[in-house]
Image 1 (cartoon, rainbow, N blue to C red):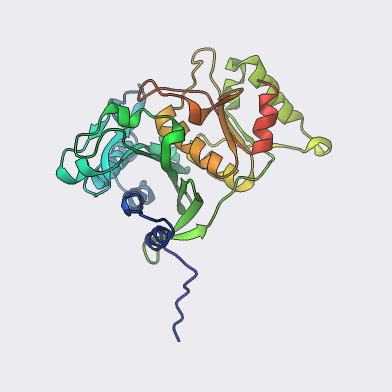
Image 2: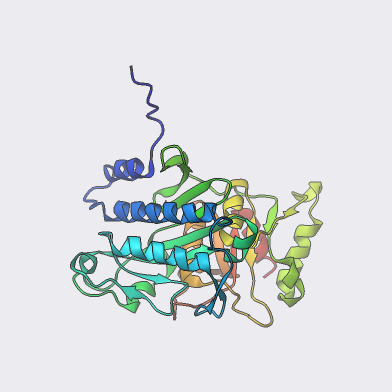
Length: 336
């Protein structure tokens, strides 16, 4: 009798199994997710030897955001772009690290029905100090007809149009979490077989939590309403659902991953100097808003404004971002 544990599914096995439940599925999305998993494995290898080879530190250039580019940022961007370009499911990509989108100009890519936007390495300021970092991605149906080059309109879509979104966290273990409208699934990289295996099926955001994640260093730059909510978090005690714990890593992937599992709220408000905040709508906010929403949480930019409903005007548009457990976001909205 075989001792193989059939309860363990690899990413490939799981996506193929899901195809059987979807009539008329072509398998293109499954192939795209597997390509993203392959690129993630390549990035993971380099992250794990970051202190041993010359991939730490700044490259000496800035990206379109005006931020210092890390060497590992460039490596990650090249890996995801290369894998997606040579796959069979992606018509083009838009990356936080590039000025504009890149349409893939070959016969197979032009026929593909999806485009992908991504932040190849979120939290890259943490690279040199060995703190968790990650990759964020979103997948859209293209608006232009198959057979032609992808255009900017294929990428400038509200988050409600996302087909799938996800993130990879490179930490004490490496995880790939992705969401479709059917649910949120988490896979952990098993180094013994080199495969992402299903470890967190059907992930749900806890209804509430006791963790709030915000950069306290900018407290006096925030709007008074946001300050009032932060003070509310600090005053929580056993009589009103507390006490709360403040946890802020400086890596959106790491902070939201923790809150997704344990419950909590993540906040990146605008400031007096930057009222639209720092986070990019297309590369960070939309994908995470989709994941959070599918998991049962809420993501907003301001009171009554869902992130997923924002009509993007440019590829590098920014927005304030608040996401987390349903009860905590609803309480936040009473302050905004």
